[in-house]
Image 1 (cartoon, one colour):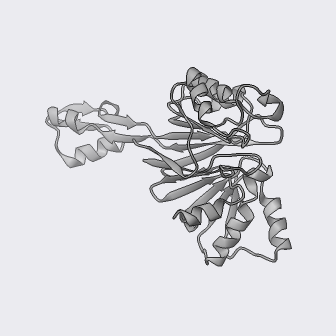
Image 2: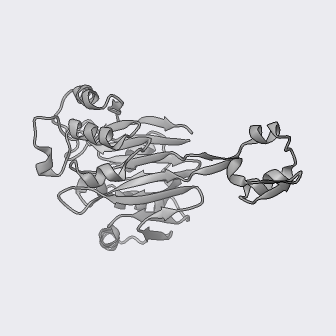
Length: 289
């Protein structure tokens, strides 16, 4: 199971919607995607533990996506954090400069990485199409192989030693018959989430997010603006990406503050991709296996 918390769903200038920040939780591992101004205050005020963040992934260096990061890290230090913090994104020089000018040195290790992988999870960047260097992120659970107990039981195979060997991918002799692991293993597909950050509609995004369970896509404008000129997407652009990439659900984010009633954006997106939704700040979405 994964949980996505929409901490800030606006973009550009501050508005009633907070600046971009999205928290993805999976079994005790917490990933923060972008960190706009005010992110830590929103999290603290609403019971989202900033100390539990394991990895922060920044899409690009525009202020609305990154200026909450130095203060968040400094607060972690004041709260006596000791655990390593992973950071993906081109922010090392920015943070070092801010830390120097504000007389701060993190009391915990920050490891800057290009991607992240452990036994359960994989986080990788993909190219997006903004007006500055930018990247989105794929967060993927690894597929798991489980033994088909029902099939084994029907064939009278109950010996746990045999079952263990099959699960480990080994061939086994049972009653004079060779058992092949591929005949008794079921692949359980992992959950996949994609976040674009700021981007215009483009092939590199469509090709990178194919088939994800949830796509969190830049949807800054209605269709009355040439969003591509600004390196952004309209809601119809986002819905088109979702449709062409065959994703399961689309979250419309980075909503411009110019729209007093943004609900129309969801209605328009659904004309192209009906599984679109417009999350409010502090709403959350649960993805189950």
